[in-house]
Amino acid sequence: MGTIISTVNMKGGVGKTTLTVNLATCLAKNYDKRVLVLDLDSQISATLSLISPHEFAKVRKKRRTLSYLLDHAIAHNPWSKLSVQDIIYPSVCNVEGLELLPGDIELYDEYIVSEMLHKQAIDAEEQEFERVWDRFERILIKQIIEPVVDDYDFIIMDCAPGYNLLTRSGIAASNFYLLPARPEPLSLVGIQLLERRIAKLKESHKSSLEPLNINLLGIVFILSAGGLLGRYYKQVMKRVRDDFYPHQLFENTIPMDVNVAKAVDLFTPAVLAMPSSGGSKAFLKLTEEFITKVEVANTQLMAVG
Image (cartoon, rainbow, N blue to C red; front, side, top):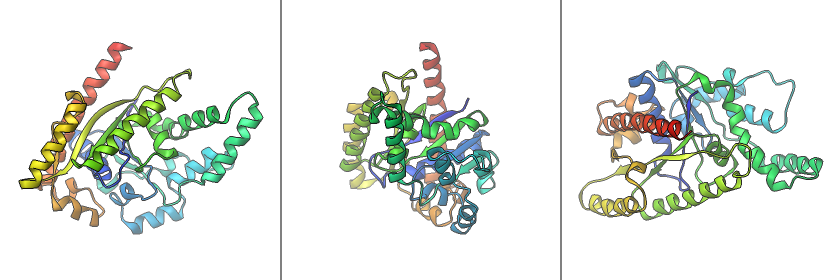
């Protein structure tokens, strides 16, 4: 079974998508891993970091995006013809083993979801709406990826900032979550808020037959800089290190590198577009550390189990 990872932070602009696509690409290209990137953000940044807008337009016209699968999950359609395997985009950026489940700018209708769950609660009579919602939240993303989870070494989900239904459902379906952060006060607030929300999410599913077993794989500092600003960043990073155990922090950080930003304009991960840049080399080192962390964490979980 593949390891499922959510990349998430309550705050936007912290390098979440940058981390997702470059980590996934390094895993596939440099470590021969089969990796699926799942774009859960309606901004479709992960999708457009791997395929061009023109290509996305063709994919969307054929309804081969996450939106199609969500529609089927929310309002079951017996006439649905496309499976998750049909929608997955293979060999992204010509990298064997790197695949994409494209996102969409219109993922789901919140009113339809609420109406459907309200009806389920009424039909069940003894169930409260909150319990029905929690169950739906738990299975929504899980049931979408379940048919393919054994086909990959890693499924990495790029979650939307904030804490909407898809972000919560993605977290609930994951084994671990990655927490990218810029060493700035507002980014730290995002870390604290997320930790509280995940603790609450675990608590809400505590009484279910299958309690949530998701753990923080690590905090990754993105786009740290040198000079005077670097000294300030180090002070902020120290505050984070004081609040977390050493194993919950990645030793490798991603430096300020304009080439990483330029790669976005090429709709290609930086590690492919500018492999010799400082940022790309940092992502490669981070990927090596990532693999070690996952192996250690899985071994520990097996020992406990």
